[in-house]
Length: 638
Image (cartoon, rainbow, N blue to C red; front, side, top):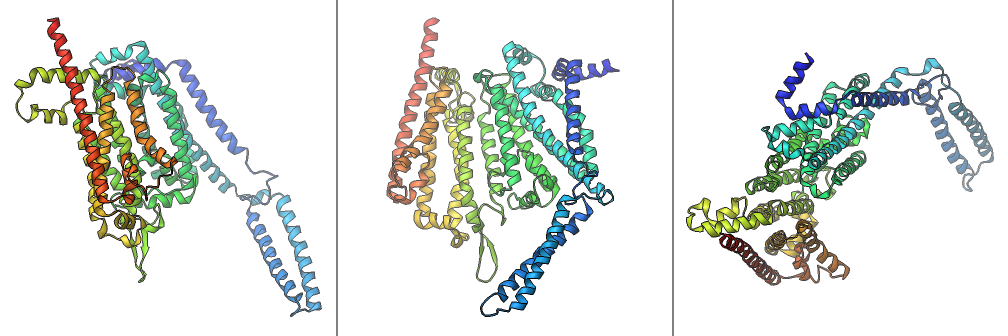
């Protein structure tokens, strides 16, 4: 039976069979089993050490007499406060009464003595065993065990599993076995499913052995089965996404030479710690980057089990919306949002894996896929931006009219989310510039091929524009321009229709309309587009260098062009509201729009267009020269 099961597993997924066979050895199984059981034992032992016995203090929460004793002490303290007020009253010059004053002082002394006696007894005496509420103690401590395992599952599965997957890819690459796997007839999907399910198999075993205690403790604590099952679904989806991302990271960061295992798992650990802190402190999630926060299962865990952090977290998620749809109003809606979010980003991870695994020189995404990625990302960003909620970043989103009717300030909501949208899109476009730009040799081959075959090409699919838009080997400037246009379009549309909303109650929008103006704002969007294209052109030119470190040069120089000019202007105290012209040359031209007029913005756009044209002229000349020189070499060799 065992051999038949193993044979079936090998036929179903050979890679999974290979990973499991190499890891499930008697010694490793024993270590994982002992570690899991010992961890559970110490968790239970830590809780049982607080089991109430004969010396259980009277003041503790599980003593039935604690509440009545505490209430009696509080009543006496309140009575003392009233007596002190009476004493001050009869001791004043206007109402002085020696007899009543002496009577009140005697009452204060008697009440103080009684309170001190009760207080001493309350804090020093032990609770009778028959007055200890053991049922409540067990219920709460079962919940403590359950919550502890919740957090352990998340950190152990995600961090340890990601580390093992990245480390496995490093070892496979060093041994050369990864190339043999590439040559195998298995599909990419089958290979990486085997990696994700097989490499962390000992971590899965560690967690699986703790599942019975987790389920028993949750049931004993009175936690709903629906919430427990929802937790497992979110945890499984989270593992699938992060392990898929770990495979992508491991394949695309070979240049880090072994350091990527610590960097990848370390970044994930920091992300989980930050999300844990944010979940416990309860900042609002009604903003454009809510999708990033719910990539961590910590928030959903706090929602499902409010005692893990506080009730505030549950109320926080209740207000979550997506395009004004109240997805957080029910557990089902919130569960669907988490699963769809994990599935969305996992899908793009697998698209990258399927493209690059067989051909390490191929781009992570095709140009057509990049258009779909940018478009769908904008839908996610704007979906979480448009939330009609009072619990948002700033209370000014909800304006109060004189008639007592409350108006949601959509203009303020969007304007406050624009920085989030800008940051995410900057990172996205920076990444796409690196991803879509083909390697030097690919561009050389493309230029040589077009130079030799241009006379035999007809139709849209074969002309230069079509090749620049869809071609795998052509430079990425046109594709980046299309992606940038998709990013800028929603902002431009919003800027056009913005005055029709509640601008009276939005300081930010009043600033853009009164100080900047709608026309100048639209010019600013165009200026932002041109500057981004200049940076993309610089990136393309740098990636055509012969240096093997060209990616480092591209990332470093483009990052410097983005960060250094605003930093220098800030150090020089150049106020953008007064001297906005220098800021129009930075990657943040919006900052200087209030300090210039429309003519200055138009001249800045023309100047940037000239710079962009010159850069691309030299880029075209460089590509043609590379293609021509390669062709000449081939002809001479022939």
